[in-house]
Length: 384
Image (cartoon, rainbow, N blue to C red; front, side, top):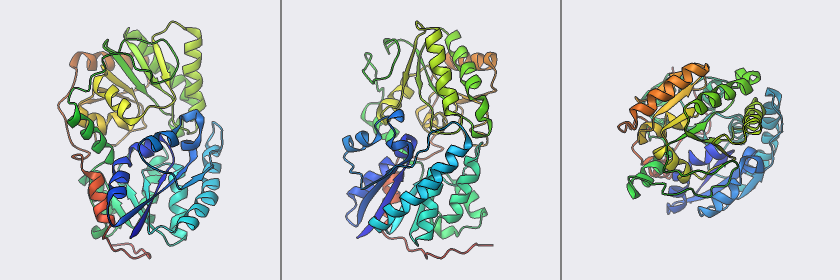
């Protein structure tokens, strides 16, 4: 039986691999192992371990590696601690494959540790183009990985152009879309009939009324501007007069700037119709995406899941530059009036038709099936 270990460094990691974890757990020839680390273990970003346990998953190893701070050096130190802790975890578990997701610095640490320990690496969401340092990290992970699970053909072709063997590249779709499809198939309308106690802070409001969903993370190459950037977004959203649901940012350089901007605005305007959350379970977030008048910010969810759901999205700034997107997305510069006008346009348009550009909802099963039988050498060779 093959042991498949999944590294989860935060809430986005988990939602991006959950369907594959379930498929691996249910596969008769595979054993699932889970390493939890980074912001996934920080109360500041929500109780992710509790969410995993509620979903039926047991954590095998925990790696406390997150270095608090608002500058790039904190990311570097976190990755350094991650190398130490993740190597110990892998030494205890002895997996046949380590699955890593995407492009974050915690993921880079897990990838390097596995590569030096002769553990084959399977990489999801590789081959995509975006802004920030994540662009470089993503392609670096591709060069370490032995098996590639890109979300679409464009990304798969790019991986092959990077010198990877075509026989190791499997275009399976995005596991995040699996979860969305499952929820939509279960309840096509996914109603929010009343305010639900998701936690968070701020005035409660009836979710049957129109609301904006805001998810904005720092751009690491612009981290010193994070506070001013989120305030421009908040001012534009408030100008619409709609209720606002806003999520706390990821643990990147600039996260304190965004967090401070949210807190300061709420302190200055305590009656503002803004409700803020540390973390939301994926099914709740998906329901909010289905029902929101517009998703505002720079999260990839507006581009990936949003295309499948048909969520009107205003994508702000450079964080998602180059990522393939559907008709549901309007790009906006970091200017309050530009953002406001884009939001108003999306509110007027309403929901879009689904575009499955990031998969058809069956990626997890494909990943588990491939990992149960794929044979790849530990020693990699570049293909010319």
